[in-house]
Structures are given as structure tokens and as C-alpha cells.
Amino acid sequence: MGKSVSFTGHRIAPFSFDSAKGHELMERLENAIRTAISEGFDTFYTGMAMGFDIIAAEAVIRQRDKLSPHVRLHCIVPYKGQESKWNRLWRKRYDDVLIAADDEEIRPLNDEYVLGCYQERNRLLVERADMLICFYSGKAGGTRHTVGLAVEKGMEIVNIWED
Image (cartoon, rainbow, N blue to C red; front, top):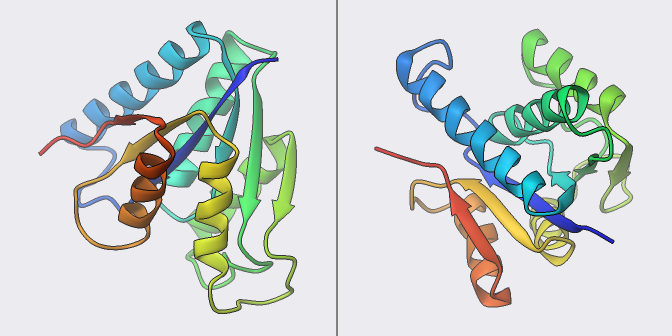
């Protein structure tokens, strides 16, 4: 049985992904995923937040489709409808990832937002993974919480953030 990777990162990047910095980030992300696959990681988890989570899931799908059909992508969605207030572009990306993923999990199993559902999702991301690939600036928030859980667990952490 293979090893697993989870992703965490800031919801909205402080730059355009069409910019030079955005292209550098994508290259670092793609390299981190390829390296993980070459080291025997075959299961990837995303929390499906707008921003890095979806971008990372799209990168896994590209790698799976190009090179590694044995790779699996699992989505841990904190509640049904989390994407309902996003703009049309992000909702489409969200839907496309869910369609391409190997399964979808809704945690906790609620039909709407409940207090603590994001923290539960973050806990599951860490609990199920052996490695965390993150886009983490050091600022407070859900990403910091998830990275902290990974540190407590003793997980390997690959941070692709660069100033």
C-alpha cells in the first residue's frame, strides 16, 4: 500500500496565477507532486477550499492523467454547498475537481455550514496523510492550524511558499 499526501494553503494567493510568480508557484507545486509520486506516494487529499486546495487538486489530476494512472485524489468537503457563494469560475473549478476525483467525502456530514467543520476537515487531512504539501506564509488562520497539526504528528512538510 502506498503513502498519502494532503494539501493545505491560503485560500486566495496574493498574486495572479498568470504572473511570473504564479508560474513559479505552479512549477514548485508540480515538482513537489512529481517528487512525492516518485517516492511512492499515491493517494492525495484536498480540503477543496478556494485557492491552493483546488489548484493543488488540479495539479494532481494533471499528473495522474499524464504519468501516473495509479494515483488517487480524494476530496474532503467540510459541508455541502461550501462553494455556493464563490464566483462562477471557482465554482466550475470546484465542480470539475469533484468530477475528476476518485471520491468525494463530506465531513462532517451536514447539509450546511456548522461551527468547527473546517477544523474537522483540517484534522482529517492530517490524520489521513503521511506528508503535507502546503502553501503557507506563516500567517494565522486555517493553514497555520493544519501545519501545526502536521508538526505535532511529526509529518514531513513541504512548503512551497516563497516571498
